[in-house]
Image (cartoon, rainbow, N blue to C red):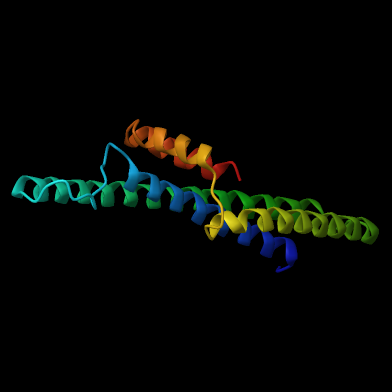
Length: 159
């Protein structure tokens, strides 16, 4: 069943996940642990092999972030579908007026999500950013892969 609240929830998930994953990828590229590959400090063979190793490690960590984000979104969608199915089962045979009240609440929630998306969209397209969040993400990247997986899941699951 497609309605405005379902569309808003999907749009919110797409915006939030892409914003969070993009912020983590940017933080990895700027991190001291994985280094800035584009810097031109030296031109020796050791520098190029070190740069290649860092580039491979950056790609590996970015793939980990993508995998964790996909897993988290899949779990959240399964939970959302299960909850929708439970609501559908429990509202069978309900009075028509109550169904109208529930639809009104659903539209109110869609309006709330639309307002939230209108605040998140400028950050998503890069009009402004949050320096405090970037520092927090950079701190998590330097902690290691397990901590990074936890923080990506936690950040995405909040929504």
